[in-house]
Image 1 (tube, rainbow, N blue to C red):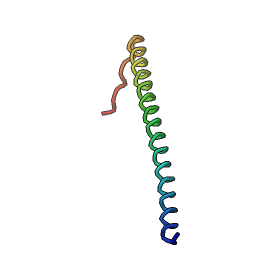
Image 2 (image 1 turned 180 degrees about the horizontal axis):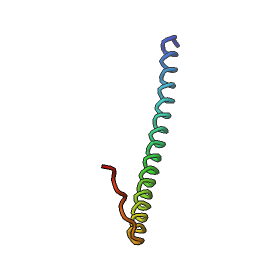
Image 3 (image 1 turned 30 degrees about the vertical axis):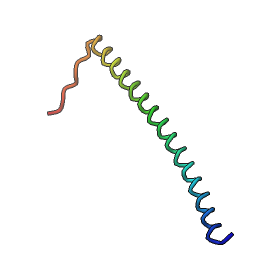
Image 4 (image 1 turned 180 degrees about the vertical axis):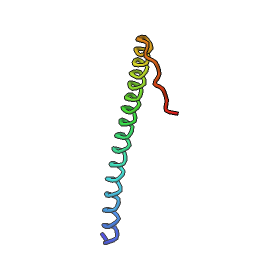
Length: 66
């Protein structure tokens, strides 16, 4: 086997490792996006609940600085 063939095999092995890492990162990114979406939905629901409580107890809007 020639030197160039050995080098080519090493590069191919490295490429496979990079591909595997890229796939792993893609899966982690998808999971993070799902969690962030769930967190945002939860935060929106909390905001809505707090608004309803504030309206129920008669809280008025703050005066804005003009």
